[in-house]
Length: 148
Ligand SMILES: *[C@@H]1O[C@H](CO)[C@@H](O)[C@H](O)[C@H]1NC(C)=O
Ligand SMILES: *[C@@H]1O[C@H](CO)[C@@H](O)[C@H](O)[C@H]1NC(C)=O
Ligand SMILES: *[C@@H]1O[C@H](CO)[C@@H](O)[C@H](O)[C@H]1NC(C)=O
Image 1 (cartoon, rainbow, N blue to C red):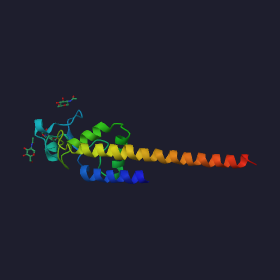
Image 2: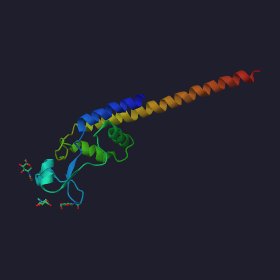
Image 3: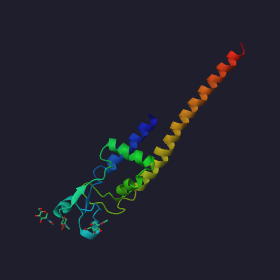
Image 4: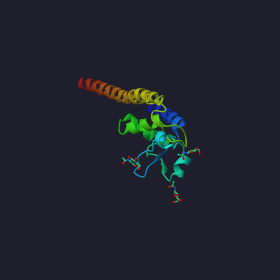
């Protein structure tokens, strides 16, 4: 429960900072249009050039998909594109720009330190603690019964 609530805080923070900002204008081959080279800075610019405006599959648009994104970050599976998207994000309906939002690195570093290492250690610690107390109980029973 503590782990889930801790993650909920980060998920909601991610939604506040990044909701709707992962959308970008893409060429037909799927590569993201570079704003500085083409002058395509907004969603309207994108549709004026008949290009597609779309989001990647993992976003922070609501707290539920935020959990999925955090799960990917915590397990280090495909987390680099998520972090890159967050750092390039400019605003809702704005084309991302490289390293626009460098402070977002802090969000990921803090999440990995506290949300990933800390909560996983907490989780594993509780399991080991339980195991040890069960073991002690079994040993006490054994000693009691073996005396009679
Ligand atoms: C995709 O298309 C654009 C424009 O036609 C081109 O500049 C870019 O190099 C292409 N990217 C890839 C990976 O083929
Ligand atoms: C993008 O939109 C702005 C404002 O509507 C316009 O001034 C600019 O010329 C557009 N750029 C391109 C490349 O269409
Ligand atoms: C976009 O598509 C419309 C309809 O298919 C066409 O009339 C228009 O010329 C296209 N614009 C550009 C910039 O290719």
